[in-house]
Length: 200
Image (cartoon, rainbow, N blue to C red):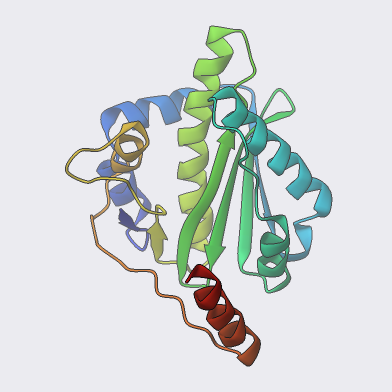
């Protein structure tokens, strides 16, 4: 799913579903805060806290072993290509998002939310927070000169799962892309050849 965020703000607002708009508006009225980190502002501490929540969220879902690629994210941050946004409720960070950008296009990489809360009302507030953060991310990226918001892929357009439906609820167009890998150095080509031999 690709969203054209070069549209004006009213047009962007209109392409989201009514449910998304209602939840964003409700979230705006709550005691919340949004932060954006880019380049040198992406600290080791921020990445570590992001990683802890990311790992714990998958543990809660019964899918252990998921961790953020910290070293890769640090390299992106060093090249000013990484953006991390957070959503806080009553001073506590409850949602993280990460993006890769080249200055004109952005790709949604990771997302995690605080699931270890027993209170149903707080869980609902965190669900609204995730939508609100996406909306704020759109506006931040748009005002930074970015024109395209890539939702990072969906599992099926014809038979969408829950996450797919969430992404679709923000509008956008369905497009098919391919990820291609190329060995750009002698070391990478050597490594690839060794892997081929070992697989045989």
